[in-house]
Image (tube, rainbow, N blue to C red; front, top):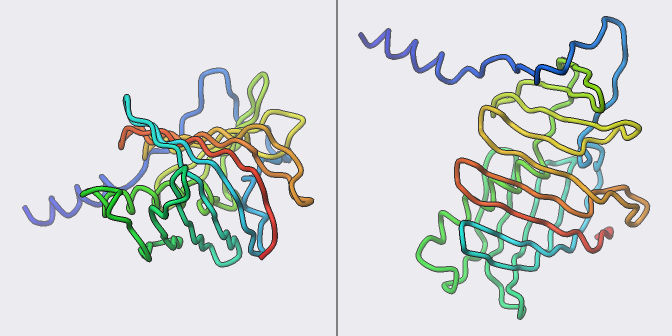
Length: 216
């Protein structure tokens, strides 16, 4: 009985192979396709200034975010401020975990839950980008899809030619998705000016407006 339960646990943790929409076909053998995550090439640290809008049902919270993103080390330090400049949280996020430096009492009794949600969303948006070296590739009428397996299940990137940078990424297994829009050149770096992250399991949406990018 214990062996059976262990096997069920193992198989429950294995993600199913990704199945593309019906109008997508596997890429012909030997054909090259480019579709990359917009933050995957950022190997030197950067500071990002953002407006963050958090929505859950009828609740809406607008915050200002100051982020230090170190893509090479896969680390983020994020400071969240209220609209009038009160510090709400200060969290360091890595590829595996997070460390809380500040959680203001004004955040409420669910401070630890907030820290976990902040860390999870930051990790998925800014730090989760497989190299797609073994990805499955599919071609549709107006876009291309790459799907690869990560520790978090399958992750999918979708590009719309002529761009070679993803405009959408999601995990069908973990039920989150990210839209990456309004690309522009900021400090000689092309980044999405608007990011919409939806966590369907947790039931909230984050909209991130990027205002400024600069080197530390």
